[in-house]
Length: 317
Image (tube, rainbow, N blue to C red; front, side, top):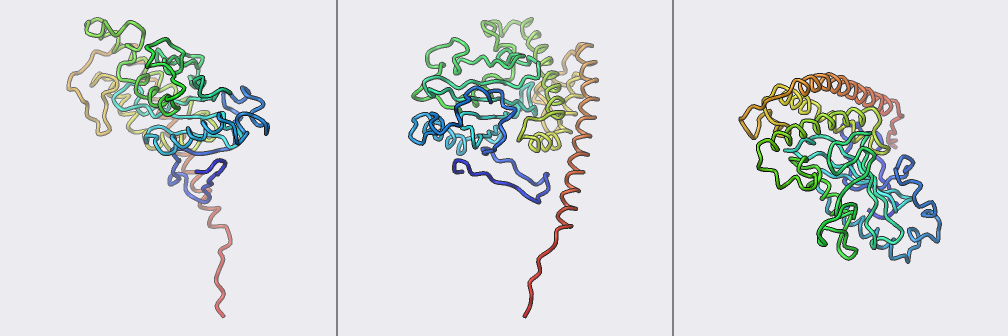
């Protein structure tokens, strides 16, 4: 897609509209870094000057994202603010974050790529991972927000935005997030530590479910249809997983789409977890039904509008 090119889908049922892996939109008003580079829209800005090395590098990043994003990560750039990006990662299967949506706002610094991008996580005030703070701070060596080995840190000559997103998906939103805490990995084989890890995963799943409720109530701009469609498609699976985890049929993260588990071992469930999940189940069911009704109403309105439009006929002479 060329810079500034915007595709619009008109007259298509929202259930049939397909969200592009990489798209360009116009409204950046709710972006966390919208006021970071106030001169970025000026003609002499490093972001708008056609000869700027920063602009050229960002355009390269756009092409990398357009051609290489996995089908579980979606990115939107902004026509008038190329220094900003918004990404959503679908929670990976086999983790406490499965089927959740996790939004990140990114901003290119004016000396990019000498410095890594700024990344803000839309937490809704919840800390569901050791690397993702309640105030949106993202702790990751690749972003230079956590010390690590030299090869793990940002490399101006080789690191990319795609690499950042893949790291967030694979290293942060992983199967056992408890061990993301510094120094905890060495205790992985201890039985008591494994139980604590399981409890942490239960909490992470509950917070992921709460994040779903926040997103359904107020989705990020330009992703409204995406959020609605995702939860329309995944509602039943999410609810079945909630029930399976609450009843102790399987460990959190092990539920599969067909209702089976990758382990046959039942797990002990605390009364607090079961009560919390029962409440979340009811809240999610209500929110999913409301989302479904809203999408059906929108679809009917679009069909009525299409039918009401005058049809052109060919004159025969």
